[in-house]
Image (cartoon, rainbow, N blue to C red; front, side, top):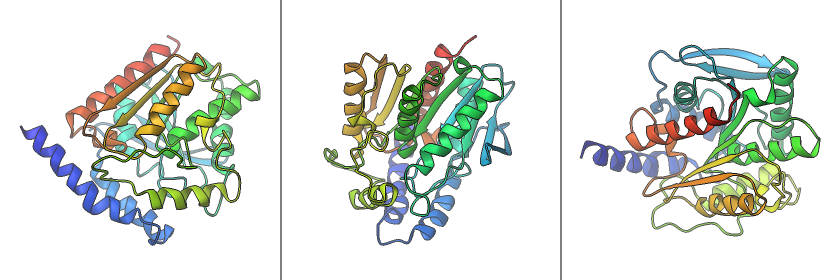
Length: 297
């Protein structure tokens, strides 16, 4: 009963506090400030450690919980490519550090509109390849991300493959945004977080005139052959449900080992409520199990 009430309360909080700020009329700088405040309710587990660093000249946050014996997860945060940071996602990455036993490395990749495509992808690739240069084997690295960061995770793997670079051990994406052309947005009865007008403007800011069906912008239009095992988690109450389902279908078409988990009555990137909402905590535990399963021992 308490979890049911908590879920209802969180849904209303997202609907009345978060969704209104994700509106195309709100200036991007103000959105960035407001989202920093909103994410303060997403708490990392007690005992989680955070360290500021730079990799390939890109600021990163390293999140750790307990001894790091499993490897690293390169985590690409969401925010429509225009907002969000490694700081806003400390709650999520802290719980992911706990569930994986890995150090989570979250880059502050450059954001649009100041830095449109391919800046975010270039930064993600630079951090990944530098980790390889620092001595990590590809089988010791996993890549994960949420929303735009989920799409960016898949795009990164595609670019690495096309450049004949070693691929990470696995991909994990939460509510991935993988079709910026918005050709098949889902229409849920309730969408507590996203507005299609906001995602449309974000897509225009990021693409800056590049075709939205470019697979490195919208991976659902690409060839996913030879990508590592993929876990997709998505809520049923979000306009990106079809994105997740279509990504799974394309990955399965291209023989990528794929698991799609749809969480009924939950919303966009509900995993930020890990540690509060049991179903969010369990989802991150599932994600942690997927990541650990494919990392080198």
